[in-house]
Amino acid sequence: MLSYRHAFHAGNFADVLKHVVLLEILDYLAQKEKPFCVIDTHAGAGKYALDGDFALKTHEFETGISQLWQRDDLPPSVANYVNLQKRFNANGQFKHYAGSPLLIKQLLRVKDKLHLFELHSTEVGLLKITMKQDKRVQIEHADGLKNSLGLLPPVERRGLVLIDPSYEMKSDYSDVVKTLIQMHKRFATGTYALWYPVIERGRTEALEAALKKSGIPNIALFELGINTDNSGRGMNASGMIIINPPWNLAATMKNVLPWLAKILGENGAGSFRVETLAAEK
Image 1: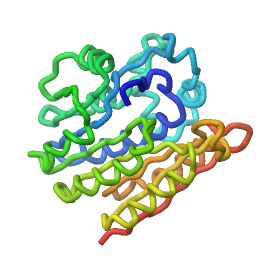
Image 2: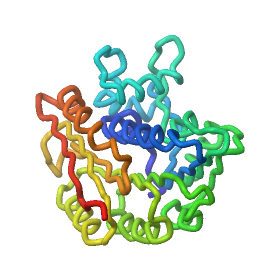
Image 3: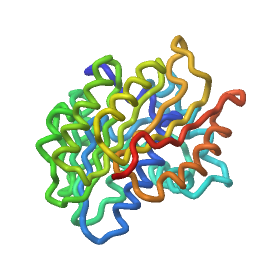
């Protein structure tokens, strides 16, 4: 939705989950010498000021990254995520949060490609400044759900599509499923990472059911909650649904999610899910 600004939510517990999973997938893709392509359908501004007006209005980063920043007992995948964020904060100061585009850029190799889509005119302007000029990166001021289809299958024949809309429009829940079905038909071997919020559990359950009925195989779900479900209190959980996940991702998240639920959960109400929505064929 054109009014959505991720700066209000940067670094929250949902970003922690999304970016830990994202980095695990990118690390797996980079294990082979062959180049890969990444498509981010809702790129945002790419980098956010945690001492800026937007972030300080909500303080959502206090539910996530700020609780991890100075810990020395982080699981390896969480430590990797926090250390990467520290690259953008000089002298240990905690003022900036790198969004998905900037994190992905750090892990691109010479021949890898990154395609970024952003519909919000202000956000796309900030994104271009953040990403600077890089021949590996293409930025489009367009609807990522619609326009990214034309990039599939990528020339590299290896890659990841990250989909994380705001879900401010109820139609987003059904639109992402329709888009994933179309994408999978064009690029069945690609990895797809769909982020979702848990605001009203019924919508999330409908999303899961639709993906189960889609016929797409090899779908995993990883969810992190910091409080009990309550439709009147905003987002208390979020998750990542991964099509064609790396073979070791489930084992990694089975170790990471209980730890995150314990550390980030409010008053002991943290929770997690690691499930298979569709088996491999």
